[in-house]
Picture 1 (tube, rainbow, N blue to C red):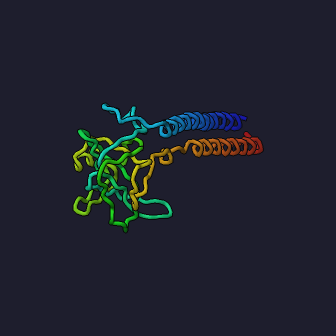
Picture 2 (cartoon, rainbow, N blue to C red):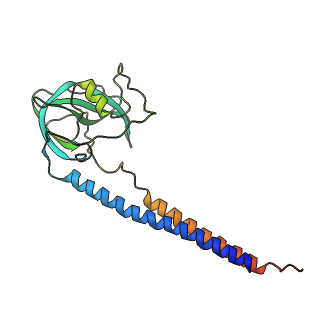
Length: 226
């Protein structure tokens, strides 16, 4: 009887913890879906002129419309696209007249070297972004080959002589072929809470099943004779 009570106690305690973790992940899932919905709505909102003062936290994903001259120098960020393969994000300086910002023009295949220059003033609609793509393992850019391995806004702004502001193009007034815009979206925001919740609930079910099996075995075990 004591063995049965011991297994029951352990079983209830373990199952309670696993179930709590599962429900906590469900709550996190609801929160994350709300955050993503907020960002999606912000991305899709009507564009506004670029504010004079920007906050990387509060203004991330802000839709803007700007006008300026795209300078001929550009940086190439090595990336990969599904069903296309390796290529580069093309980052240029946009001179707005008294203000210079970074412009992420989009993606071009790795074998395309003919990145066009554009004369005259152009209009760009896009979203502000301060991507967190660098860490301690990110290689230093190969400046000789003009290959970067992440969008490091501060370093790129220094390289092109702009303020540390990046606009990711969504729509332009010019034909930028072979560069294809890669608009900002929420696809890269991790949201694994459903998988975590299913895992915890599955572990709780396994724990309960094992507890019942141990309890039944303990009850069937023959009593020792004194």
